[in-house]
Image (tube, rainbow, N blue to C red; front, side):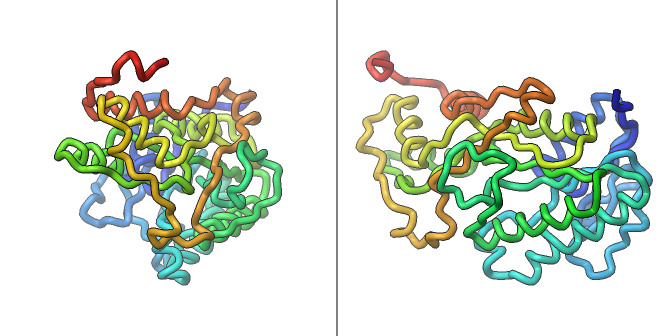
Length: 304
């Protein structure tokens, strides 16, 4: 049986996943250290400064830990295209250097990744399928996976689909527009596979605690288009469907290589490890709307 790790390091502990994971692991009795690239957030305790963009990153000053997870990344597709050298440094070069240093000290390292490593043209993709990224961001993620897994059997990759929370800005902006009497545009050719934050955190904690090498995937059950999400929202608000205007993302300036017809992934290995059941998309968004304090005005007819 794997010994319960006592000390953990989270690279990017002030991000959405990193901060939630920090709290989760702390509640489980672990001593957790977290890094930030925002110097104002550094304290004298377990919050440490680390900027992956610095060529002389002081990895050797990091504490000795049993496990570490790299949550920090440049995740915006447009940013990766606009600043390719910076994106490669932050997403590939620095994480690989950091992982090598940590593994040499006996640390097990997990790197968060994305379904964007695939071509996103097939649903529920298996973890052993060859990567075929179309976007710049996806290519960087695929390169990072390859570099980190090549370091040895004390490394692992955890791929995730779209994390959604009660702070999902797109849905909030839609609600504001609808409340003001307006209509909302939503992409009918671009999808997401929503995953609640708690599922991502539980998956990351499981992989860290079990310390099994290789690739794991955590995903929602299926994909929905942004237009389908918009129609669901207006139904929940009791509004007519014509308040949604379906549009094509490519007609609004999105590059064809950034489109994701499918992002869902197979989660068999994670399910075997901790019993994970992929959540249905509208169940996830029902929870999101509850977190936002949105009361349902959906009429019974909408269930028929």
